[in-house]
Length: 562
Image (tube, rainbow, N blue to C red):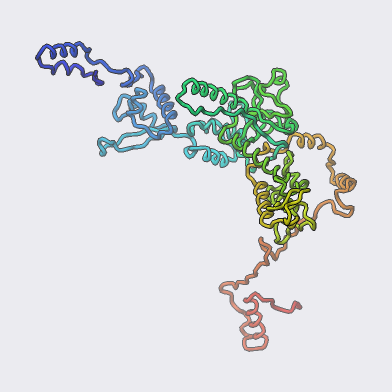
């Protein structure tokens, strides 16, 4: 085998003359060219940078350090092998080393030499403008601290894939973005409190089932066909997951380009007019706005050209595909939770009569509701208990049961409705308390399933139809308080004797911030001299001394006549 270091000539020089076999071996070895490398990739070729200026070398080092910023500070040997720039102490490029030491974008650390700890070596690393930003959480925290905004370009050198995290934060509405056309940059602002609204309609995704792996893995033909079919269906599932099915038209509630959350993952409603191109690379008229909401529809020219993904009464297009682990799994869990809830409300197994109305109608409906989910679960459980003819609980405030049960729990020996059991069997009696309690707990658990929160798509701000209604009727609202008071009286929204404005709440001076009475404290002045010492020992002096003592205790002094 050839020597990696090109020292093959040592073999020929140390071969002693011997037999013919050894001579043949010597001839074979001597025929090998000297300094030949066994592999061109085994030894890295150091680039020649002698033709570059010091500024160009500094720029190359900055780019290299930025690309490897996750590795921290690097020694001069690594930089020399990659760039051919010698930054060692007393090296050829010592001027470049001095320039890097004074560069605010470079972090220089003095580290002991591993071979000789008594000496030190300068290590160079990239210093971002925001050195504390290292992941998505610290990135969001930094933007939230910048109340007056921070430039997009100032954050792009923080860490690897920071731009992907910035795009996700913008798409999800966790931060605000404003375009700066003068500098061709974006300014990012903290959003603050979120106002999220559920959209009407239950969202689902119809994906083809993946094929089952053959049991006989030794059958190469079947395994090859299985792999090809699996690959094809994965591409189909990825393309299909862009189109979300809904049972209520979303076009009246959200626009193309606005942010929408499906399966607990934020997307933008697809506005692409070019296939295979992200929204950022679409024409400006088809790009999603930096904000999560928009006040008007996109350009009409997009409709003339035609959108890539349809947006109709049964389809909600997304700008990305749902992941199998998060988005698709959450939608499937929500579908199973709704099916279980419908089965319980419909009286599964004939154990109780179906319930409808009230909390049941709200939970089972496709229309979004603003009611508290835990409150709805409790009311739904009481409705199930009432269908058995008893209350869900006997605690204070529990709903009363029916006088005559509407359904019975089937016991052994009992027949179904309209049937008689065997001779000697008991007729219908009161429901089994344990079975009723178990059924009520199952109903409450089904109504409290966290997966139900993924049944509806979620957006920022009020829906499109509510905003349009507000803008259309804004001119009809009187601006004068007197006219507004008259309109409210005509619509019977206020009583005739009700005042136009609520009286201001007066803050009592004798109460503190918590509404408790203030404690009065009396302090004596220092070095206060008494001037009525001539009254000591008299009746008036005794009265004055008693009054001073009461005053020091915080009690009232005098009868109010003085």
